[in-house]
Length: 422
Ligand code: BJ8
Image (cartoon, rainbow, N blue to C red; front, side, top):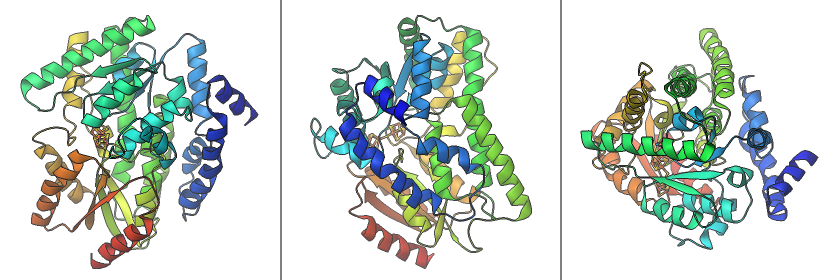
């Protein structure tokens, strides 16, 4: 811990403010995770990572920098990690999921900005998150208006490269995205001084695909009637995937899956038979946002799937590994990423198809459509999502929330009533 203090100091962090965050986190982890019963032993790894969230991984990133490597911070699942790792750099997710960072963001952003953006900007400007201090360059994207303007503010403090994400899915849009990926590759090459070769890119495509395969395997376990892992535990694994070392993450997650598959064989479940199965859909739940899972899972139901960026949108479908030239590989990367169905696209029927498919695959009893307050995109798309679910006969509850706890009681009442009627 003394080492962490020294590292944070050297990173120029606001130690006094950061101490306040360090004081509340262990309590939150205890309340949300350690209070669960019959957890798989393999959760030890993720518990350790979360317990020292501002220590273990940041010190690894700094080690990498000491050897001359660069670290890139990202905020969206459309930004292809493959290209960054291919230049011997490291990509790390930076989305802020705590109310702790929101006031810092509100100093420069309108209050009616979504909490994810406010927290991300606040974490940087208030100097209270080591990951935001460590990243040498941020990679933004043009997904929503709030983010677009946030990049301009952040770029006054840190180098930012913004990728222009098309918002339709015509052939020319996929082509345009491939061009953007190529540009990112050049930016990363220049910034790191390392050339991306076809061999390097092939390696990193495999590296990131392997991470996806591990998550896919984890989620497959959640399709089972006998549920070997809680939604809360699965969520934190998805969140850790954004910043952990990808090879180690895949290894540890596969190890956990060995245990989960054994549990399935042995008929072990973390919930009693008949517990209602809930899928969450909507805006992402960035770490340490565990509020909804915690409420659902202490209200007599269990979360079996998240159609979210911290969920299926992150790992479903793999990049074709057969390309041998940079152009073929970049086309394959563009193809895979443009298959993600975010509400920033119009139209976005693919997302409705995904939700209907996932509801069947994960045998869900009901869906909660979650919107982060002031996210206009997902809020508006909720109209189609909720209508399609009703037409399909799947019970759906639409909720809007932020990072504060002020609505926790009200949410608990609504979610309990929803679970009751399933
Ligand atoms: S692919 S969901 S990670 S953009 S920041 S859109 S919540 S108002 S995060 Fe996102 Fe990429 Fe899409 Fe996923 Fe709304 Fe907030 Fe914007 Fe947000």
